[in-house]
Length: 165
Image (cartoon, rainbow, N blue to C red):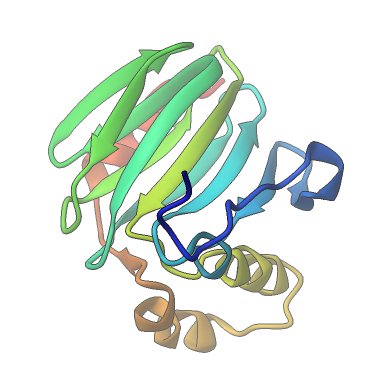
């Protein structure tokens, strides 16, 4: 018995938009507007030791990470942890965090923001930044629009760079 007026949000693998390439790619799965605001989901694939997201926090959503393959190195608040395949973590809103593939590993992760915010346009925006279509000033101004607030975290970069060849 269906007790909701909302349809299920379904994205078949062949219908997912893929952004990026090289060491990092993002499959845009289901965004907030498709899920009635409940969540936004993406799958991120990171090459060996590749950086994912730089230190930041969100003010509107908690962020769930599920590690499907490989190992993910994560900064959560002032802690550093590596989560292996089959592991998961939830970062509460307002908590600083960052992630990348562990130094000697690749990683494939599912990320879900709950409640959902429109995130797919953020990944398209990042791609335009990488190609020079968006200026760093425009990127700085967009932090509020995408609820992605960047912070300075020298310990994160020291940890990441200490393990690079």
